[in-house]
Picture 1 (cartoon, rainbow, N blue to C red):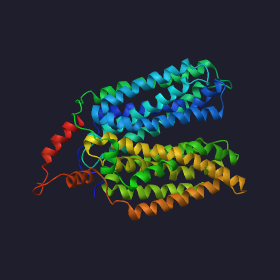
Picture 2 (picture 1 turned 90 degrees about the horizontal axis):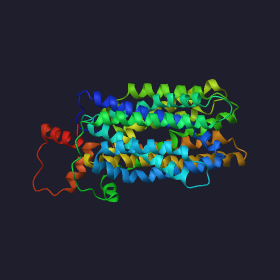
Picture 3 (picture 1 turned 45 degrees about the horizontal axis):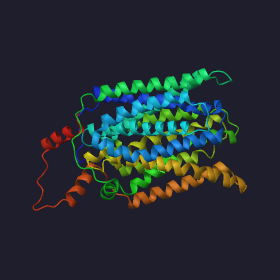
Picture 4 (picture 1 turned 180 degrees about the horizontal axis):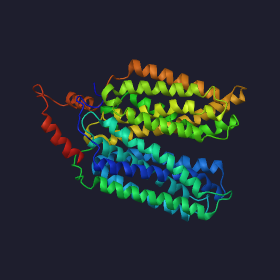
Length: 438
């Protein structure tokens, strides 16, 4: 059974508009990952890890809170408008960083918050656009293939940043170069997004209930909790891998990210139809199993050449989990509220990261203080937590979630006098094209 529709379409969705959108997302990720050297910008202004955490933490909170308004805007204005406006604002906020002269003012915090809200808007609008244009039963596949651009972008962006920051001393010219490159990539992304959506029609006007009403009516249940778990687990290496390697006196971590990116990209493309063919629940269980194996695979690591072992399992988990969780949760919502559904699932990932990372760091610190090995304790704790959560989800989670489930909810709540007639495929297609504005 399909995860996102009752019928799996054989229509080829990879048209010119999709690849333009793919290029737009790739340019966005390259620009964001070229800002991985943001810490050097903070250091240049005289700050340290505390100031870096304060600025980026405020940005993450702002981006999380902004998602709830963005979902409503996408539903009312259409993904095209929010996508283009977000990319324009992102370009502006990034370039305005060059006007920051000190860290003891609110200016840098406002710019970082604006930047992260804009990134969230561009990302969620692109996913919503692809979701609405996907053929029946292939939503997760389309989101997954679009997301594969992120693996390519994160391979290019950091290398670009390292090239800009050659030398032992950070200069203002290098800071300028980083923000100019990022701004240029965001501008390119905006151009590609414009071309990808120029055939879209204006979103049809409809009443938009409050967020609380929509969530109560169409919430994805246990899948929302799984989104939080995924947010705290899948991207954990981006935060803790460097310090884990330092604890083992390992200086080379690039092999981890190389193995991670190659595995994630390969698995994502090879299994792009897995979720839509075998179901959201099965895909999440497979992905969580890979995540548990990844946590356990960190335990025997003692040298740099062993780092690809957890990276392979982690990359596979990322490839399975992200499209399944986002598409499975978003398609619970009717098409006219798809922006809200997409942002809700992305917010669950962000919330999981926001809560999970401090807890994971506290586990390491607390274990060290008790005389226990810090990182092995954290990996075992996470493996046990993920295992328990997966068992509960397998036992209690809905077997299938998707567009057909949202339709059932609407039919249950709508007053009926006589049995509903069998849906006309041609009528469904006509409504679908009018809604997704292809």
